[in-house]
Length: 356
Ligand code: IPM
Ligand code: MG
Image (cartoon, rainbow, N blue to C red; front, side, top):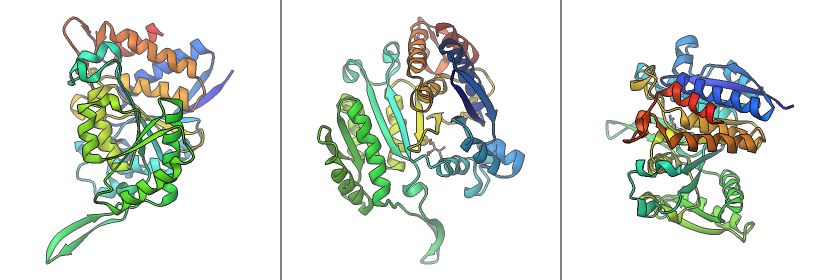
């Protein structure tokens, strides 16, 4: 029987309540598919600042490194808005991504059948089924480049740097091509090569790596066009590969096409077994503690964990099927529509467990 050690980073805002529901579902899956999970908790983000003064304590990095996988809720909130940039909760999130070498962020945008009507995009545009995989580079680019404050003509000014090295682009491109090979063999690389030098290097490199994958149909799109095409004709996309900042923006857009940002999961991978799994939404401090947050993105993050880190694909399928089944009858407020039963965070977790 397989035994897994999972570190929980519940974080801030709705983080703890949604992670608790995901843990319930993982325990249920463990029982059903005959493996065991042992949990350890560590601090990240605002709660870590409150307890230790910094958003990413060394102990958190050590615990994550010693586990099979990490499940994260969300970090941040207005309480820490006055922290200096390098000590904000978000710096903890970037820090853990960097410390664990999680360079590949997989953000699937999948529409669950019964949720089609919750999408703001017309049915005829969504078509039969929406299934886009955004592969976002996660440890490079402008998020990790040099930045600073300066003065220009006597006025205060600030700067950030977008830089990519060839090996950084090569490894994320390979992740994306490998995924495309397992899917519909279509890859769109998104850049801004008409303006940015870093994008020109990105594009050259992706083209060179494409020679290793003759079966994959590769195309290139400028990011502004990609943002437009996502709502004009999302069906044209299979796998999208892009930089850290473009992937941040396009994945929020793609999540809304799928009905709600409360539905989308993500996996951050390092090339090894260890991965970090988290919903793509934030900590929603305005609704924290009210038992109304949608836990499904976190529950679906557990399913990604089972698939990509723990080699339990059957348990992953079972959770996804259970979520689809519950959505036929029950909804949290963010995806509520007439004719369904409105439920809170805890009830949604219980319903998924029961459907498992
Ligand atoms: C995300 C979030 C983070 C990011 C923030 C919270 C730093 O928006 O995971 O998409 O920009 O990467
Ligand atoms: Mg984001």
